[in-house]
Image (cartoon, rainbow, N blue to C red; front, side, top):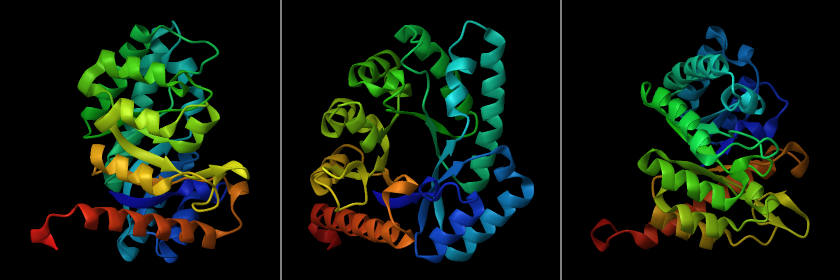
Length: 271
């Protein structure tokens, strides 16, 4: 497993500036949250690649800003919208290849105009197959306001799609949907390939690590048993921490916990 930080934490700072600040402060693994098409012009992609090369930063995943229009574009009755959205996301996949990113974070349909699981999976699978053309895994995130917010729906996706189903487990979104992150992990198992982590407790549902009551180590130990190659990205909202030192502190804590779990699990011949 590998600890990282999402550039989304520093929103509305411009993407390349957020990446630079994380890199400058020792964060070596990131998720890029693209906030606008102009974030990924040729010049800005070059700038970000230069930052990553200079500071030894790797990128595992990309989160698109277009997720709020996915219900309209992918899950309506108008087939041309589906074609248009897949073509649009193919351009994102091309950009991901330049960063070496492997996982595309997908929100999907909202819960207010829901569709049947079979139709949902048919549309989702089209995007999954488009991602495969670029070596990208499209992973469904649990999001409270979306159909994916409930565990029973995630289980149905997993049942219908089998090995084509992959998931991003967002801890704060699970809490907001009144779902247990542990239950989601146990039910989806190795199909959870990526995590957005935060703490939670009496002070709020999206806190720096150690500021709440979440059993972080137990959760990561469980994740390691199911998905030892997962990346675990700190993802906080800007109002939930004071400054970048809070992000760096949580990132280091996360890295220390993961390292101790891996050391404990290592065969004697590797110690």
